[in-house]
Structures are given as C-alpha cells and as structure tokens.
Image (tube, rainbow, N blue to C red):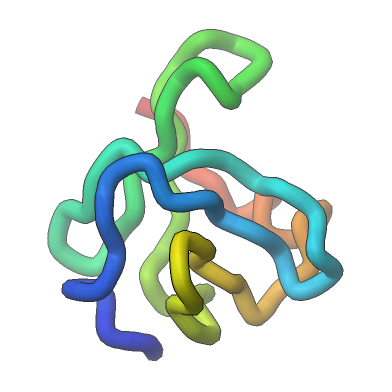
Length: 76
C-alpha cells in the first residue's frame, strides 16, 4: 500500500487504466473518501487505501482498473 499521508483534498483518483474514478474529499484511516459531486447518486463513496498503487503529483493511481475499483466502493 502506498503512503496515504501523501494524499490531499481535491486530488484525482485514477484507475490503472487511466480512467477517472473520483476526486479526494479526504483520507480517513486506511480509506479515501471521494467527493459526492463525482458520484451519480450524490453520496460520498469510499475507496480502500489498499487499492492505491502510487501517489504521483496531483493523481492517486490505483492498482485496479476504474471499472473494477468502483465495485469495491463503499457507500456512505
């Protein structure tokens, strides 16, 4: 797992395939809370920090493709 302390608000979360998954609202423990403006249902969703492959500039790159990563999302 990458160092989640490098992740900041408003960073882009991108799947391994380069597809946008969401925008970081904040990090809470070992999970990343995504902004609700990126979701179709206007709810916050969470991504496990275990899916983070690396933090590069303003991007959080996941180890899973976007379509797979969203299946792991948790609703709030």
